[in-house]
Length: 394
Ligand SMILES: Cc1cc2nc3c(=O)[nH]c(=O)nc-3n(C[C@H](O)[C@H](O)[C@H](O)COP(=O)(O)OP(=O)(O)OC[C@H]3O[C@@H](n4cnc5c(N)ncnc54)[C@H](O)[C@@H]3O)c2cc1C
Image (tube, rainbow, N blue to C red; front, side):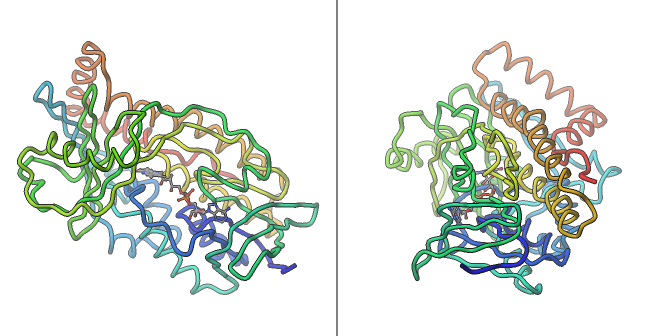
């Protein structure tokens, strides 16, 4: 068995890497293990809200994020059936934050830049092709069973954090339930390179509300890559979803010119939370702890706020400035934030996008018109919607 000092983090996604960076900056040794051969680069989250940007500043990586991200201050909400659109702008929160905007870039780029920063710090180690298969813990540490190309092995550390995504092997090893529901429709995330979106009047982030065919369109790179995400029938196969992409593009962007379809990911979406986020010396964060639909960008935001809280709580326990009860507080508070803020907000975004009832759609438009013309209401909405920080840990 190989003994590692400090914290073993399972999963080299954005939450795992950010947790590792925060702990390493606090002088704590970290080892990150990742089942894959490299960082996942399929289309996933790509929008970072003001609370996340403040956290990236705290971690010393805000300049690097600005260097790769597209800065955006607007969300356009479009009702093609009514010929109306509304613009909500984050400039209304100028007096509340140093970052009254959002940055757009792929989460794989965030993981990549944090990976580099992490390895510049002492006592850090990142191992790809290392899959966790089981956990045993006692009062002094945790032993992780792993599969590597060289064969099975055991790694022991003082603490283990499961950041291994929605299908978390850590959560399963702890035999924790993952209660909630699965959305009946499929979601299809596409990345496309196209320089003609301006002719459709698009902003940098756009919601197309539609009773059958809703869509979210946002720029995700400085060199003109866009994310187009939309719903598909629940029984649509992966192959059929990929075949239907041109039809969906054509419906939304008639006479679309030559473009490059870079990636397509059809997937199933859930609203679920683990029954516990702490069992002894093992903690969960990010999608391993909870998952939600991507419509409002709440999933990664909440996961990164888990990381922020865990760095503070676990760091204090390891340094001996707080007792272990703060880890129970972490577990309870992050569950509360998900249940009271994240999943209701994500569900409301999804409802707004695909509302079927004509009367409710009319009310939504009245509401949006009112909000769009009242900066103070817009400000309060933005401040409450994106704030998944929860109560301070200490
Ligand atoms: C297809 C897709 C599209 C999405 N689109 C959006 C979006 O548009 N907007 C949005 O806000 N959110 C979106 N999400 C959600 C968002 O991507 C997640 O909230 C975010 O990835 C969570 O980060 P994470 O680090 O917790 O988990 P992940 O990014 O899933 O990372 C987990 C890592 O753990 C590794 N791993 C898994 N099992 C093991 C194991 N046994 N041993 C070692 N390593 C392991 C995985 O390989 C992976 O690298 C999407 C999710 C998916 C799946």
